[in-house]
Image (cartoon, rainbow, N blue to C red):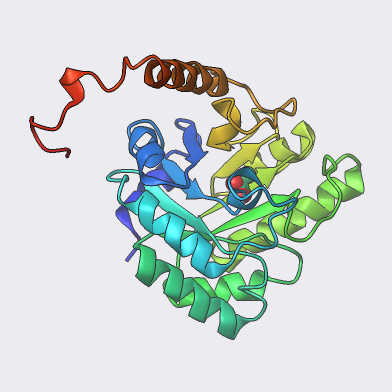
Length: 264
Ligand code: KIV
């Protein structure tokens, strides 16, 4: 039986845009849950939170821990968790690790970066009732150098073939990362499953961004990111004020002395 939340996502194709963002912790997830159809615990947490130069060092335990926190903030959106690099190299390990992620975190689905070789893995996971979201284009687990994918007719053909294989393997949706508008359009208009774009124009059924990027916290603002707020400046202002208050003896004041109600 298909998960109700996944069914809702599928029904959005050609009707309304699918809204997605990433989260790595409960407090952010709780805010996103009111506005997002999909919340992704992305392995981008490697760069964004842990400060690694790529996504490769994130372990299954890291992702499980963050997803467990995110789960606590989510009531209505679909929670998707990224499988870290090297955790789905073959059918056996993919099944074992995906089951572990689902059982430990209570997420609704997993995402894996697709290459021309892992369609069989997707097929097997789906056969074993593990919902899978695919991911093509710029896939940082497999590609060293960033480039816009699908710039020539033959590259577009390859990407389309790949997307179709992922759909046929049973994935319920597919992330298109940094694809040319032409490639995104061809794939989105021909696939039955929804496409979620990042840096792939508006020719997609939905959009995803890394939350820390759009909040102005990560310091990573390529052209495809729209910075909606400069949270770094807002936080700095508050921290500066706190520091000043403590130095001047303005905090804590009698209002903050512990004789009142308990903390949450
Ligand atoms: O890891 C991540 O955050 C992702 C998104 C960029 C789609 O895969």
